[in-house]
Length: 244
Image (tube, rainbow, N blue to C red; front, side, top):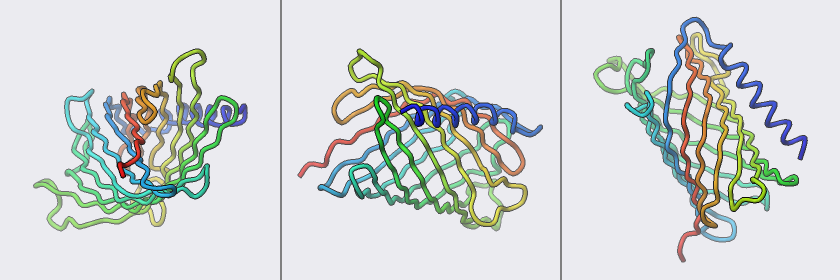
């Protein structure tokens, strides 16, 4: 239990220290609000239906940053390991002081492996994901010869959940995630694309529904500028089985 808590705490601390200092001179600070929902619904003893949707707003919710969703299937490999294959999509908008050149649409198939373990009162989750990102800019601001660009990205997340003693379903959660570009890296792009550090408070509202709220520090390194994003989070996690 101590080792898991120390591991997640160390990852969170390192990211919180590195993120602001890693920004170059051309950097911006943004304030976002993300509303997200995740669902995994059991179909039978091994298989589950998976989906997610996230409405991401910039400037403290005044304008769009991104709309993102995914749907797919999950399979239990063992009592503690689960694999998921999904097709994701997103619309990314122009926001902030250093916006992207044009709005972009993305198709993002991905696969992931999730492991869960419990040590004492702490529940530790580790997730490794591989994404194939297919992005095309659109609107009148896009280049005349705009076409689909494909890149690969790996993500690694560690998350620890600690229930509050003497409460009914309340818990604290902390997670750290790293995004790494794979294959050729164009121009001045960095191999480490971004990090996300989350601190949350949640509650198991019903046996199949959890609600969480909290804060995320995101460091995002683009080719020409850096972002430090402070984000308010509201998350719903739903795992009701599908009716038979």
